[in-house]
Length: 111
Length: 113
Image (cartoon, rainbow over all chains, first blue to last red; front, top):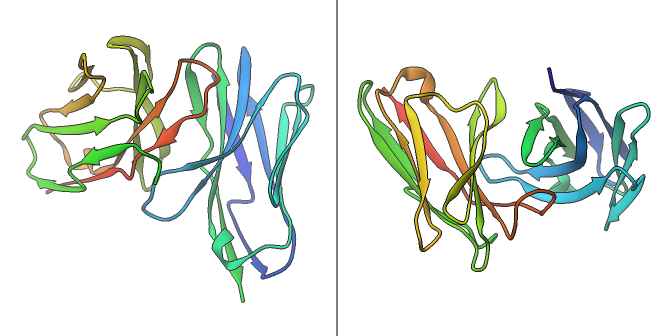
């Protein structure tokens, strides 16, 4: 069964600090891995999409890594801002269009 | 603003009723996806349409159905509603099918009482 596990479930950090969110997956056949940011009550917004051959991708202060051998991904947030407070969702695509979503990591950036 | 529009924004209805949620994709996008997000379940993929044809199916109940029209807007029909159907329903669109970025709409919050 395709599964995506994210850790931690929630995280509180001080403004200006860095943090790393983890995603482990058992999805086959692997097509791509995406990270989304979702503000409460709003639609998710794509941060990165990585295919099998990519192991790092950045989007501003967000850097995602992918290790296809160990089936792990991480999302590193640098110099956090209050606006980074949101849920971060890891999504893995199996085959053509089937997406498996993680339950997300709820990040709170505190002043 | 993602360019994807969804109506209505909120919907309150009773058990056993039927509702229709509407989605207009971004201009030029051919794929439309429907997702359900419950408090305890996270986002669940329901169904995808590409240029009017069903392309992929996820955890969609038989009481639910969807279609994509020639103008590419899509509707999600939910019937025989149960309390457990209360959730946020998101529509997303992408230019193609596969590893394309999906743009999510603002969602429709459905409350079944």
